[in-house]
Length: 85
Image (tube, rainbow, N blue to C red; front, side):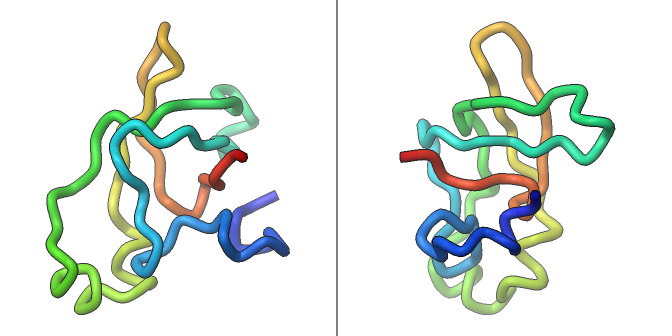
């Protein structure tokens, strides 16, 4: 399941609700679920609110975020992530 199909909009990672350092996210790995699981956001592009607005969701979805589960690191697109409670 991709985050775009998530019925709880507050769980989506978008330009209006970007990922933040330290946030816990679920990664839905599109590569045969090799790295699917819970991760912490450890790297995000440094963008101010005006840059986020200018990017919009289409541009934000092309950014790469760095994630870690404590033993490994992965890079992921926001559309492959959802917030966890």
